[in-house]
Length: 108
Image (cartoon, rainbow, N blue to C red; front, side, top):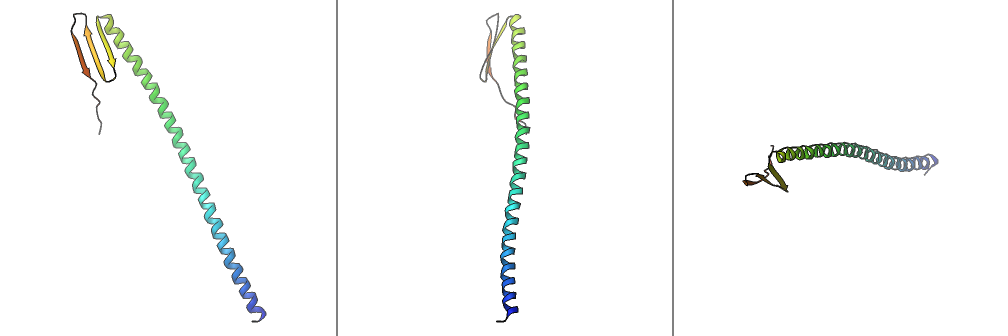
């Protein structure tokens, strides 16, 4: 082998090793970028879900106050309402009592 043949072999091996290292570095960088994007997207989704949870808690509080107001108004007219889980009992001053189960509406 002459000098040019050895130089060609060294350059070829060096080029292949450099290409492999560059490829691995590119793959790792791409994986890190994708990971950062996914983390950012999940943080945005979590922030949105926390906002929705707060809105639902506020709505639940408002509805509880509304139910309490309705019960107090009916109590002042001689009707007693008690809510136990999904069972609602209504009784009036004449001794008539009705108990019913709350049925959830399903929206499709």
